[in-house]
Amino acid sequence: MPPTNKTIRNYEFYTKPNNTKRKQHIHCITTATTLLRFALLAIYKFDPQKQ
Image (cartoon, rainbow, N blue to C red; front, side, top):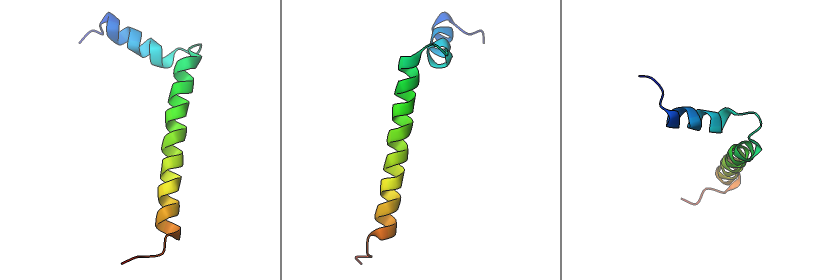
């Protein structure tokens, strides 16, 4: 299946090295996910078992 113009545009949107806004957006999402994971880990580790 040949890539359409939209596919190419999306690919460039995500991979262009000079597209700093997209990079910041991806970095923001990654950071948020990592922080959330650490928070969940901390809750599971340090929260006394309430059962």
